[in-house]
Image (cartoon, rainbow, N blue to C red; front, side, top):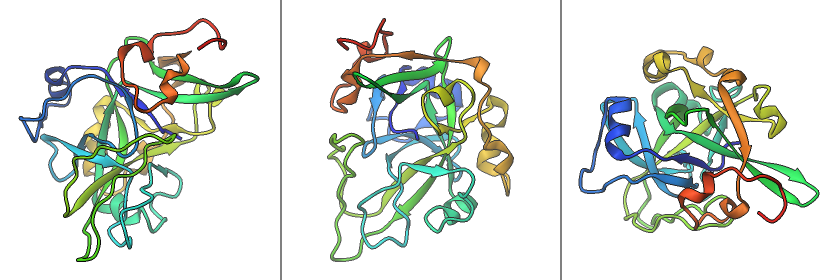
Length: 241
C-alpha cells in the first residue's frame, strides 16, 4: 500500500526533471512532506505529457454513482481486469512524481512510520492511473477523507472531478520488511513508455532494493494535517517519537 508520500523539490526543479510545466502558473508548487489522499497533487497524464496537472488522489471510476470512497491504490496484478481500473489502464495512465513514500511497521509501542527513498532523495516517478468523473444534476463533489482521518483540499468546484490512483506491486527485499505491497517506481528511461505503449504490464515490477533506503521517522507523520520538513528526518528509536 502507498498511503502517504513526499515531494520535497522546488517547482522549477520538478518541471526540469520531467520536462513539463505546471498547467496553472498562478498556483505555485511548494515542497511537500506529507502528501495524503483527498488532496490535489501533481501528476503527468498520457493525454498531456508536457503538462503537470493537479488531480485529486483517490480514483473515482467514471461510472460511479458518487465521488465518495476514492481508490488510492490499484494492484498491478489485476489492474487490467478490475472494473474500477480496466478502462483507465487501457486509456488513462499517469506519472506520479515523488521522492519518497511512507510505510508503517507494527511494534510493541504502536505503529512506527518509515520513509522509503533513494539515498540522494532524488525524484522518481510512480505508475498511476487517472479518471474523470462527472456528477449528475443532483450530485456535487466532496473531497475524499485523507488516509488516517485527515482532511481533503477544500478548493474543488461543482463539475468534472479528475482523480488518480497509484499502482502497487509485490515488495522488494527492503520494503518487504515494512509492508506486503510497494508503489511501482518506474525506471527513468521507461517513464514515458508507461504513458504510451499498448500494454505496459512488464513495467510493473518491484524496483531493485539495493538502490533504496528505509529509515524510521517521527510519528508526527501520522497526522495528515502536519506537512513540514522535520517529518523526513531520521529518528534513532521507536520510543518517544
